[in-house]
Length: 397
Image (cartoon, rainbow, N blue to C red; front, top):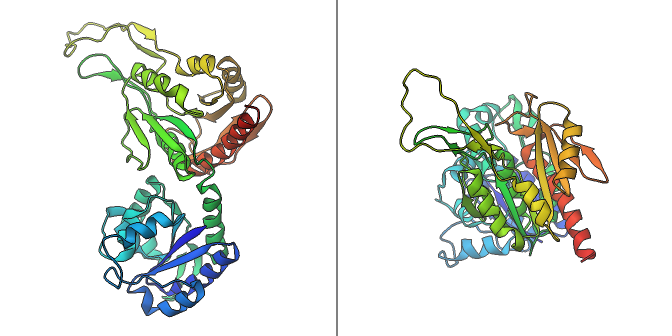
């Protein structure tokens, strides 16, 4: 395993040497990259002697600048930046590439993990939090800073996380990095939209966040991912085959036409159950009278997949307002699913649009109720489960 360790300029830079050593004890080959400011706190020579590799410190040092950042990015399994200053977080978030590390980030297709460290007010500043939110949305892992006594003499959040914790997060990502290599999977996300006329439609409150996290996690594990998504405001994840759809009919066509070529399908989209029987041309004019809508059922994509599946692992979602386990178990049986992810949509911490979720994993043989987790962690635990089922399916093939 090969990790690029990026070090930026703050007092926590001295801990990079310990992080490097801890990674080496886990069998990781570490390639250090330092910013100019990082070298004010820690010498490049230190990391060079510890790692056994020349430390890249300058975009214009003795290497071919046209390809060095590309080759290093492609040769690594993880880009870890520890410590990560507010400055580098902002550069990463907004695509600024004015030194080797920021240029390397833009060239990296493997997972990225950052461990921020800074003054408490810098960490809490809306600009920094906006940068962190952007990076999270792109699939970058964040090892949150810890609270305590800071180098500036103040106390609060901002201290670099414990090196052991950072390394555990890195190793966990590395363990998953290639676990789905060679697998083709399909994920659906977001709502579908059913048009009433040229300006009006019916839809639902799905943000698409859960489905996008599931697609990103599969990509990070090395899978070939197709993401079929209804309209969302989310940033498109890189490294996936993105298929934009609008209606339930379009989603059905996109999913069913690709089903035979994939090994797993995760239907996280909130597909409309009904559509207008007719779509008016132009805009329906208001005339003071009541308007009655006739709705007809849409294609039950999940049920159709269950009827057609041969070797595929099929995962569905159940968003329920009551009788969570009962309704989820019923859907599991009727749709011939291998696993269902059920969540209570009435909870304040797991409602539509939330960044967290509290779910129940249910299959024919077992169930697991998860505590409140980020949607990213839910996605990781879901793929852990799916990988076990993929392994069992391949063993019996």
